Image 1 (cartoon, rainbow, N blue to C red):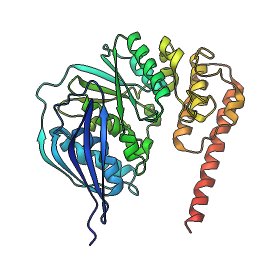
Image 2 (cartoon, rainbow, N blue to C red):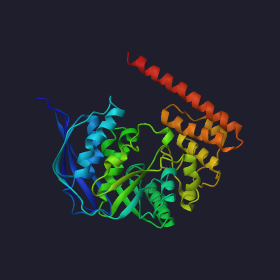
Image 3 (tube, helix red, strand yellow):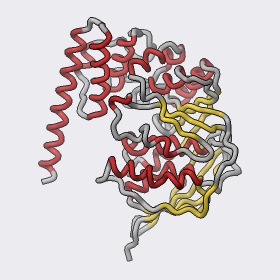
Image 4 (tube, rainbow, N blue to C red):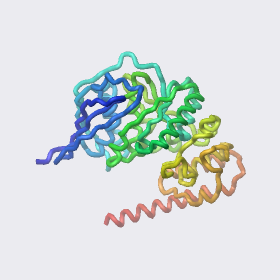
Length: 375
């Protein structure tokens, strides 16, 4: 007999970190897997608190349409905000995500949150800017292996961990290494960028609450180009708890402004990484994200000074496809900055405008082909 989908989350133990057993019933059969977060900053005595897993798995549960049952405690504030977070996600993606019921064995409140503050770090423009622009000293820098870097790529993870260490030292902070399988667990069902990644980061942060009372997630987009995305100024604060504030940082800044300040850091000039396409490498230099960042650096006045990206050349822009709203938002931002900056770069101006128009046409053709295929 078929039943409604359900996810049951139960406490589990893992040396050097936190873990939970997740049993997923799809209506006919069940499968049990373990999710985990490893870090020396995790208190091993708090395994009955399942808040991290509710936060990190909520978009996943919404994608499955599965009610969530937690055999442990969940932070009182997070439980109160679950419906609001779901309303935002379901409002953005009504065809993919639906609100689900959440039940916990009980709630917990933290009377005295930790005083440490932290910033997530990927070695990209946004995370370097968050470190460089902090108004109060940053205590901890968090690089999470298993998100942008595959769990089995120890070489690349080691290199970025060293960049995180260098960046932390440069701003007077301490780097905390973190590793998790949460992306591996959720990636078959959720879309990482648009649905999942902000919740995953917030779930990881909560696991470090014994040392961290506030954490910054660097904004992906500036205010003018905000659109539905897994990390968002309306969504990120809803992952806050009685133990920890989650802050969506610096959406007020453009990427050129971010690049301009980030490149004042030696660690950024030597170790910036933005590429998701380099196979077992650092930056390919020629994908949309690499080219966009090379333009950011050019307009900021640092062309050729980033050791991990080549100087900008027009041919690389001509090869880039801007066939989605997010990519075009960054191109519009570069074009608008260029036109307002007084820089004399007519060839770049024309190339950006052409790339944007070509991307719009390409997206319309792709959408039309999908409709034809659907009948």
